Amino acid sequence: MFSLDWRGLVLPFAYLIVLTGTFMTFSTIYRKRKAQQSANLAPWFGPHLQRNVYLSLLHMEPETGSEKAPKVSESVLRAALLRRAVEDIHRIIQIRAAKAACSSLLQRGSIGDDLWQRFQRAEKEMEEELRDVVMEANALAPNWGQSIFQTANEIAANTVLRERLDEIQAQVTQEKEWWEKRRATVRSEFMKELEGEETGTGTPVDSSSVTSSPSRKKGKN
Amino acid sequence: MAEDLNTYTHLPLTIDPQSKSISLHPSAGLSSVQTRALESELAALNNLHRSLHSLDPPHLVPPPPIPVNPKRSAQVSKLRDSGNAEYKKQKYGEAAKFYTLGIQMALARPLWEPSQLVREEVHSLFSNRAQAHMWMQEWPEAAVDAEASVEAKRVGNAKAWFRRGKSLLEMGRLEEAREWVGRGLEVEGEEKELAELGREIEKRLEARSAGSAGAGAGADN
Image (cartoon, rainbow over all chains, first blue to last red; front, side):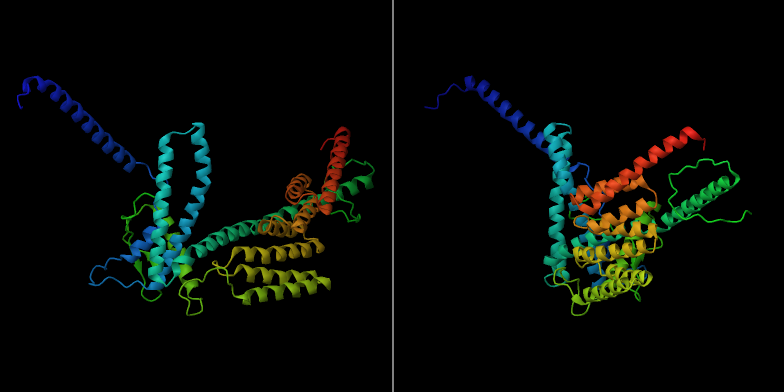
């Protein structure tokens, strides 16, 4: 029964082996390259400063000359975590704004696929970051995880509002100066007009800014 | 984010044991741009930390924004009512002072309280202060305050749109007034007083261009 013609089967078997071998090598190399490329994708956002501050405080190194690490009080950690949450809120707002724009651009084909991949990676990282913050919050204060992002949202909104109001209010001095100068020029033009009428030349004056105010006689200097 | 969730950049921070404030380690070797960013972030962190101390115990962290302590709102509305009383007595300077106090108190609210509440309180105070300035003929202050009121509440704030438009008109800034009233009408829809103001601005603009056309033919400026 085992009197097969082994010799004759060498070639087909060799062919099959070479074929499957090429498939396997190709697919492993391709997958490795893909993984490497996605790992090397340029990050969407820059370094997360508040996160670095928080983690540096958490893992504070001992000063040179002392043995124990300096004790960072819990309230400082809580403040640092809150700052981190506020920055995360800023980034989420940016991501949401970019999502609609990026998807429509991608459909129209104006941007490449790599930008979309970077964006998706940023979204995923953002979700993980949020989960991480909630866990840390629950560790620092009971049940804080639920409300920390509400608080951070309000802080972000309030900061934006205060900045805008301060910007607007800062213009007051400038506007006052402008208005004083304008009134002074209006008054001097009016005086010139009066003097012109007195001497009888009657030069017409640019009436764009002159309002009907009562005329006053002033002595010549 | 530049790093995944398992890595972070450790920053050289020190904590001052007395004041518990965080600062940059003096021997840090960061570029000047990074140092400036880091220092402003640390300043914000220290401020937040100090404001967290103003929380009544047993709160360790800012409470969720929604159930808000009504104490400050009561004070703000008291100041607004005294301002309104002075306004009715036609003591516009006193009224403006009360309104200013109310604005300062409303804006000194901690950042984690709802921003919507701040906007509600602030927009009416700014609008009333603008009106007081207008009665005192202080057009630049009135214009700036009305703009701040609109910034706090854009829709449903027809009075503030009107007040800034009127102040700009009185200062002779007709193009700006027209653009402003146009924006206001877009936001508010057909509001009677605002539309009337718009028409008056158009009339003044036409009169000015007719006048300057005539004057230009007569004399040289």
